Length: 453
Ligand code: GDP
Image (tube, rainbow, N blue to C red; front, top):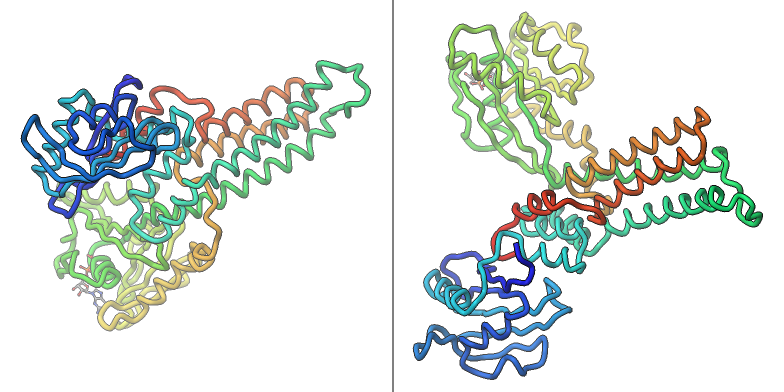
């Protein structure tokens, strides 16, 4: 897409509302809007001023508007930007946009304004991602993370770490290039090692905090699993406090998956109720069963439900086995009925007893979730971490490289070889903030934005 085009889009939601904003950005934005504006000459006004007037189509008055004129470089895109505040409503808004396009602007792609802000160097990649997160944030925690990111907290953390690596690289370099230069400290593996470890530890802390942050931003992906009729749907309903899943007495009625969302301590729990796991000939049910087993690896949390009133069956044991490596809470339901299950056979740490008739134990289940994910502490933390999977995975790659570096030092690899790997880690961290990027990455990333941003 041509960066020289002047682009335009409706930046507000298209619907019935008091006002709508049409945003125009690029070299010709002021000229284009001036052509369709009756009021002051916008080409001669001061920057960052607002002007009352009318949008006209030849002689016809289209709307009464306020127009903001913001000249480069202190604008969202770092280009000349004009925003037309017109009356809300679909036809007025569309008509004004149509006129802007007829006068020479091109319709912006999703995220193109923010993409320009990035390409023009006004914000880095983490800040651009924060713009999107801010728009999409559905709760207070997400909003806090996003606005901190936008203000450059994440960038600063990464920049500081890169600076530290750069200084280490420089000191190694001096040694290699000027071995005779006596004032410079001779960089042996011995001297490099503690510095690498220090950087590695800092990075580890960032990654850990980021993973907590991801829980805040993306919620906890939870699945409820168990054989038919143990009370999965009832538990989901109690958690959701609404009758979303249909509870019945016939085994296997939750054929497919049912999903719901609750919020605990401001963290959202995205719960999927799976069909019962059991050996089955029923095709429909079989799809559901396979689906539920497939869901285990992706889940952050498994709620594994068993029936207090029954001995452990082969299926129960199979499910218990399948969840071995997962963060799992075993829920022994139907606690109002006689105990027939043998608890000693269940070698899981987190066991909760519930019954869904008088809600006994449902609160304990919620408390257990708070405990397992440190949700109390999470609330109080400073929100200064990498905010998405792309950033976290790059940080992990950098960490991996530093681990290799440390191992290399252990194995007495020559310091100039070590230096190459340290440089790789520095570059990986650079990708987080977009110091190095590919066209594909940028296109893919910004296409997730909404129109007009
Ligand atoms: P699912 O197949 O695992 O989703 O199980 P359901 O939630 O559909 O429940 C199966 C049956 O068990 C229904 O008749 C529920 O009313 C009943 N049930 C669920 N929880 C309890 C409980 O705590 N105690 C008793 N006595 N019955 C329950």
